[in-house]
Length: 292
Image (tube, rainbow, N blue to C red; front, side, top):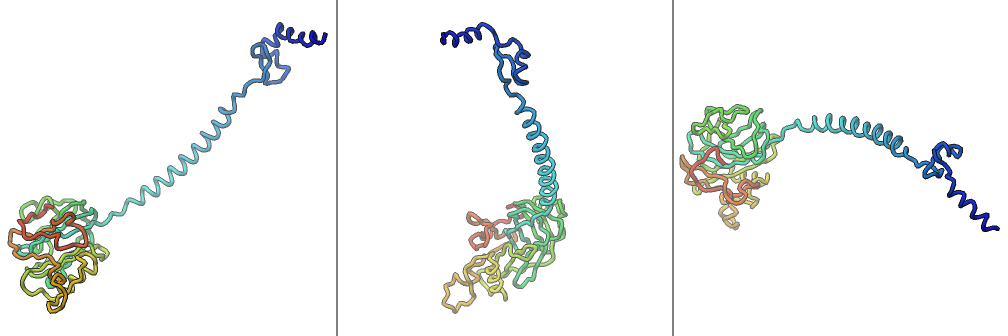
């Protein structure tokens, strides 16, 4: 009798559907729907679309953080406009020289591009030659600059061929005519940046003859400024120091120059490195002004 009472509802449920339409289940609650003739809870479909998708992704985070603040303020106004306005200074090296020409020539090469304004070249012994580059000139790395002592033409800013290409001027190099002259004896040159800091230097001597007064002190100045051979040098043949310690013997020997030859800074694997060394310089070779 008990078994019959248990089985009866099951057979009854199989033969009579619980619902055929959603409204048949309405009495059980607003989220009850009819599925396969059975009243069941409706699946949730609105949580991911309406609330989280619209508010979190589009309205708040996307508009405020990405566009208004970070994009407009930090990237455009400050970093882009202010940082790129200052032009760096060029860095030069002395690369070729001949004091015997009617207009002595000194060649320089830019190892770093930038402005020339304020860079100066000094001769530290007896010629008292000096030259400071004027405002308005900028060069690229690898550019060649020629100084014509006693010359009659200088290029203009932005026009390196203004003086033409008739020797000794060059259409490939920047030409500057400057006051002064050089005698063919010992000479010590130093290049200074616009703030006075040492940039390059080189001493020249002849194999015979007395060096001009001040040569030893000038070579020692280059050493103190760390632009020339660090070997401590003296000029006292009576001392016990080896001859390679004499200042003349760590300088560049420019003996036997002629009107068509120059000494050039082309020796070794890194001829333009500082501090300079005598081994970076050649003996007299056919001049090639304006080309390095």
